[in-house]
Length: 231
Image (cartoon, rainbow, N blue to C red; front, side, top):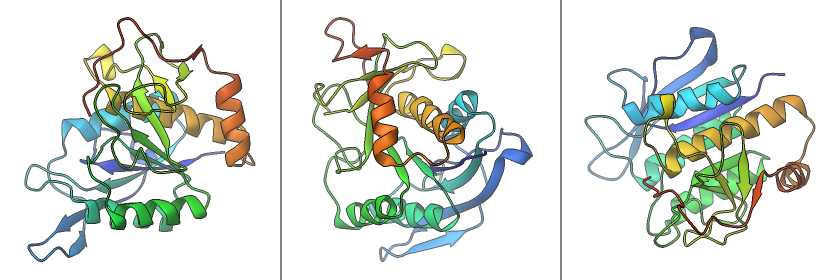
């Protein structure tokens, strides 16, 4: 069974045509309103890397390209929230959020709550150092930090023992072992979650959490040599 994954990021184009299920760009105007546009124009390397890592972990995943950043505009909380709602409407079962805001925003929190209430799994980046960020810090969101102990396909159960209060850790390397961080770890973990849901399509949230806890390759934070996290 193929699992649909929404990627809220800077866009991607270097994926097989069969992997792309939908695409749109979300741009905030000067008055704070978000408009949805076709997903055209130049993509960002960050989004390309995230998409590549999701597919590396689960090649059969269908991807939704929800662009909230481009060379011409930066993401806003409202744009991210709108993109989350759109991904849910397009059938995403998992949504990757390799990004983080230092301050809580009601519009983003509400969008996450709506997605979780619909049974969608949200996976978001959390720093290993510094303060918690959003949406990773919201209840119900699977927060992920980079963990240098993890090889490809592995994950750790951090249980919020890091400064960023991450639940899980994953390999922080980007594609081709390029330097990465929490963003890349989140993408890898999203792919792992998509693979598990493809294998166990009837798994609910509790069942997924139990499996991730029982099968973690590492437990507790890494106290020596923990990867520096850059979202």
